[in-house]
Image (cartoon, rainbow, N blue to C red; front, side):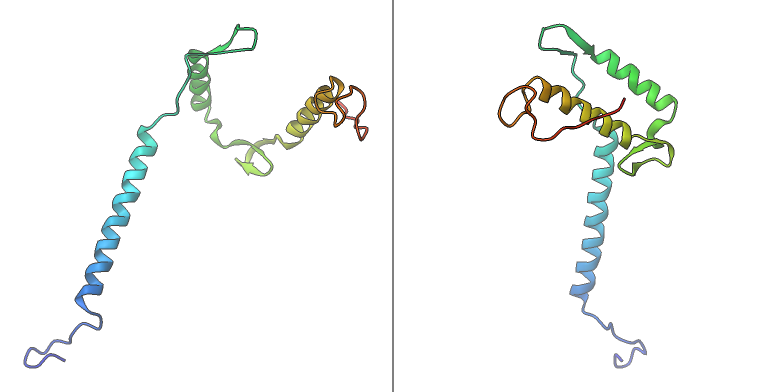
Length: 130
């Protein structure tokens, strides 16, 4: 107890108190800055995306139109893959795995994925139903 004031002294030093307050202020400043950058920053959208033959596959306006549909219908919480995503809608895991296996089978049939480089010489036989 401080002499003559009737008040009890601090249990921690003023340096610790200043460090805690400074850390608190700095932490919330960084949190606010990151929140600001999250909502003001936008991913790059290409003007157009072309295939290997030079034809335009899709343009930037197609991406923006898709974003409008996505936001208009509130699809952020619709569907999931491998259990990650929204609670509403289907789980696209089985569809992804089927498409992935079909793609591997097509590549192996063309000789791209075969260990020996020979078409039709896979190390295992895979069968995928459509």
